[in-house]
Image (tube, rainbow, N blue to C red; front, side, top):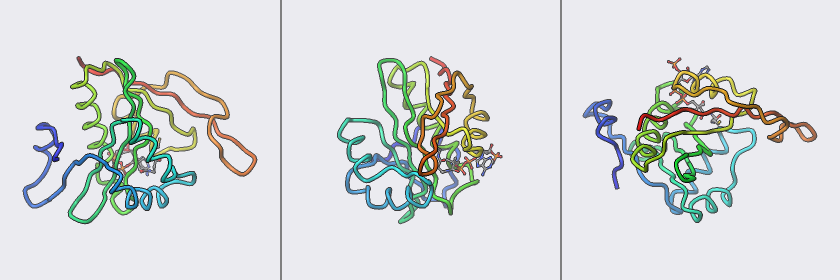
Length: 165
Ligand SMILES: CC(C)(COP(=O)(O)OP(=O)(O)OC[C@H]1O[C@@H](n2cnc3c(N)ncnc32)[C@H](O)[C@@H]1OP(=O)(O)O)[C@@H](O)C(=O)NCCC(=O)NCCS
């Protein structure tokens, strides 16, 4: 199924065959391969399987045989919590994360959600910059939320963004 919202279709040139597709179990090998190249503490295959089983929304951007990126998010009543957003290193800094966030926003609004939430490592400057430029604001800090080194932990910045409903 092609999930491009009409607003995003306008951003694509006819020559660029990029599709936004639902993530299924059959995609997970490729997803985990990208995940392992993108994070110091990647999600495992089991984490992705659990997310799909739980019915979380999971979409991936593909260009022919290439997996550009993906997101996983969980809806709780009128809020959507972004759990994972990743762009493969070879495709970073080309606007694809913004595209994924825009797609998530449109999907969330279509479900009746009025707010997006996420947590991000305090040290993840690229992601913090992405979220701030997209309209997220910091609303909290969870101390020692993520594992960092073998014995150290790192805080999570909690961010949210209202959706136009
Ligand atoms: C964070 C991430 C998703 C950004 O993906 P991307 O496709 O490269 O981002 P975009 O090209 O859409 O960039 C949008 C904005 O994000 C910010 N940004 C993205 N990468 C950045 C970097 N390396 N340094 C500083 N700012 C960055 C910039 O504000 C950028 O806007 P600009 O290009 O106009 O300056 C990507 O780096 C990634 O997958 N990282 C590893 C996984 C991760 O950390 N995910 C987030 C977990 S909370």
